[in-house]
Length: 218
Image (cartoon, rainbow, N blue to C red; front, side, top):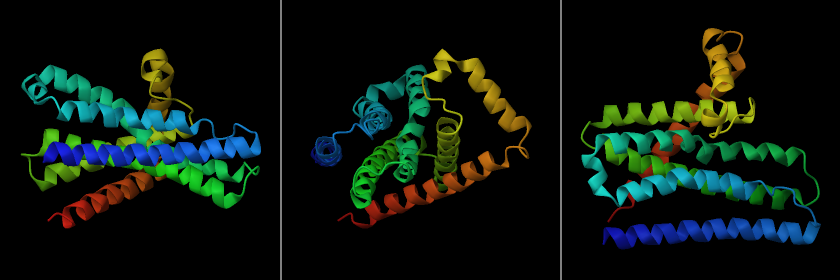
C-alpha cells in the first residue's frame, strides 16, 4: 500500500511539472521569445534532492552503511537550496513584459510551487531517515537548520551568483564570500536579514504542509 501511494504522488508531481512545461511552451510559441527558458533548468536542479531521497528511501540497506548515508546526505545538502531558490524567480516578473502579467505570474509560480513540493517532500524523507527516533525537538531543530542553510544558499545564489557546482569548481571564492558574511555580520545585515526571514518562512511553510498532510490521514 505504501509503494502504491508513493507512486501516485510521484505521478501527480510529474503531471504538475508537465503543466508548467506546457505553460512555458505556449508562451514561447505565442510570443516567439525564449524568456523564462531558465525555469526548466532550475526545476531540474530542484528535482535532484527529491530524486536522491526517493532513491535512498527505496534502499533501506543504505542505513547499515553510515559512510554511504553521510555522503548521500552531504550531496543532498548541496542541492536542496535549489528547491527553494526557485521562489526568487518571481523577481523576474518586473523585467519581462512580452506576455500578460497574469500568465507570467502563473507560469513562474507554477515552477516555484513544483520546486517547493520537491523540497518539502525531500526534507520530509530526510527527517524520517535520520530523525525518526530522536523526538520532536530534534526534528524541529533539524528542519530549522536545513531551512537556514537553504535561505543562506538562496542569498548566495541570487545575490552572490554562486551555484551548487561552485563548491567543486570555485570553492575558494565561495569560502571567501561566506567568510566575509560571517566575519562582518553588521556590514552584511541585508544578507542576514533575508536569510533569517526566509528561514523562518520556509520552516513555517514546511511544518504547515506536513501537518496538513497528517491531518488528512484516514
